[in-house]
Image (cartoon, rainbow over all chains, first blue to last red; front, side):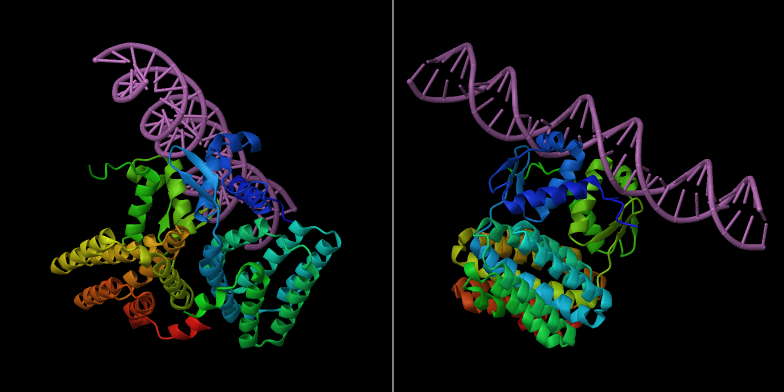
Length: 221
Length: 221
DNA sequence: TACCATTGGATTGTCGACAATCGACACCCG
DNA sequence: CGGGTGTCGATTGTCGACAATCCAATGGTA
């Protein structure tokens, strides 16, 4: 049996809006109002309000009482010195906790995502590739038995992705990114936690290299 | 003119529920239902729902669809290796960005909080002391021009406080904590950013020492 | 003209009612 | 006696309407 789609409207709408924001369909400073969204998606304002609350707490929109909301804009410093270091820490934590629990299913999930990336490259579908990239790291974070790791990650990661999605779009280098992920999985397979923890940090830094230079300083501090 | 209480019911209710959770009035695993809260506080369920959503995203409660919500419980590992390192990083980041902007008002705010602590000690009011402690660090985080620092901090800090509030209750050592904060302000006054960044880290670690030992390893990693 | 009260439209804040879902228990049927 | 099945209470999910608030435009007055 498949998924059966019993997801709340709030969650579906949140996913959809996040997608629009991350792909630039809703660029920073765009004005979004509850009634408009309610009309556009055919749901009640109550649903929209809860959705917007989620997005606000995740830092994707900013809303001021009685006035309205706008899509947030994110500074390079914020990404480089605040969000990325936190993301690195979370994924390292998740690996330390979760890697010993990796089983056949886990690696099968990794392989599926790698295949998705392959396909995305073939189709030149950057959005699909980013989606797969996101899923790849979600597997890591979810593997940790501490589920608050995922919840914090959820509130950090979209902003990082937003920043890069709107920046250059790393079109050309997709195959190398795929290779990078493959190498990661290989390291995971060895079961060497220390190596994996180091590798994931290097991976995240490199993946986001183009725009960042100040990173290392802030990580150790 | 003073505050004038133009705060939304959602925010007021969130503050109140957080207080109850952090003081142990609502211990972990307590069941909370929307209608009960709505009745108890005389607000609509819509308000309660938005409040609960906030608390859930902040990791203070866990809710499952169509069943209900319970107050979350937090593991020691989670606090020591995930939440605290992140909190340290946020406050260090905020200091680096915000300290150069500290002005007379900022230090006045610090002094007011120190006075609050003094008073709380005199009244043996632990809750008031914790409240002041929270405000102290909020000043730091708010000083950063990057306001997402505060939003992330808001979603990290309550869980940490919850863990300790429910644990021992550091009753005896209150005066030393006050002194610790005084020393911090003194360092801030010198304007030495590096020293301050180091001091805030030491402060947070020491403040939470009793229950933690593994901390250092995970911070540098 | 300059100033300020008001008013009107847009937007969010709050509410009460109805719909969907879940879990447990009683009930029927073999 | 056992297994499914339906029903019922509790709880969350969704909705449309009304209230409060903000802001800019309007218009009156000195």
